Length: 285
Ligand SMILES: Cc1cc2nc3c(=O)[nH]c(=O)nc-3n(C[C@H](O)[C@H](O)[C@H](O)COP(=O)(O)OP(=O)(O)OC[C@H]3O[C@@H](n4cnc5c(N)ncnc54)[C@H](O)[C@@H]3O)c2cc1C
Image (cartoon, rainbow, N blue to C red; front, side):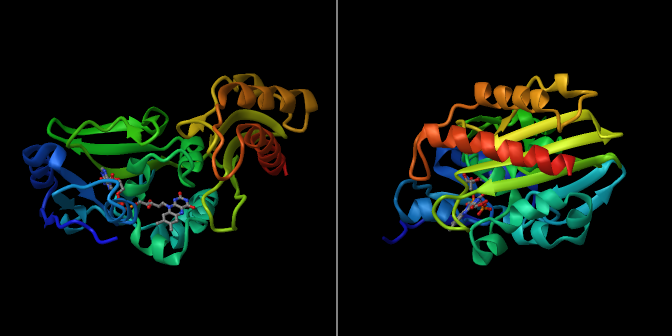
């Protein structure tokens, strides 16, 4: 199918982009790498007469070490995150997550901002970003604001961004020296297909006892999900079967998988349990 014609507007600054989004309202949409938006427009599932190209705005791409963590510009490609020496060293689980997305062509073009703003329920990056305590920065008519990623996803394809707001960066706090994060994904169709279930876990350990535990899953609820209420794991050993069962019970209670091409809701519950167990074992290893 061919794409219906549209105007590509190329702003030179964030205020100009925000003004274009305001001016054209529902007729306009921001475009990052275009890997999702262009496919949807080609399929004629969506049509926008105006696309606001974010690639022409300077300063939105790049990965930088800051005092308290790492900042990734919203236009940074998946491939840049996957291959970045800084990300590989500071957050290997995140580099791992990005390395599994689609194929090299997609990763070379797609942006981290586009990935999060798309808010699909089975994306690779959100679970590791959630357990790492990431926040996003958005710029809109009222200026700049930070949103904790755990508050960002509101529903399938729905985020906390208000109309006209542009995601400009993702910030990840430095990990504590005694902390570790792991990422696991399970796909049922082919190795580079979207995940059926994905799990990230973060643990801060002292003398093999857990000081802080975070677990997040994708593919098993309308949004990527940071599991709440894991404080009971503090001072516990993650090898303790009773503790593991309590964590798995919290996961089972909070997820709400739907059946789709990649598995039934029943199957996804089983896989969520299995892969959470594997992630906890890796944290403990
Ligand atoms: C073949 C294929 C396989 C894929 N497999 C996977 C996979 O296994 N795992 C996975 O996680 N993902 C997968 N994806 C999805 C891919 O990660 C997304 O297409 C990509 O992240 C979207 O980024 P983009 O920059 O191209 O966004 P775009 O297509 O440009 O935009 C997507 C949406 O986000 C909005 N948007 C973009 N940038 C911003 C911004 N800065 N601020 C506000 N809104 C913005 C757009 O308006 C649009 O609604 C796959 C995609 C393809 C095509």
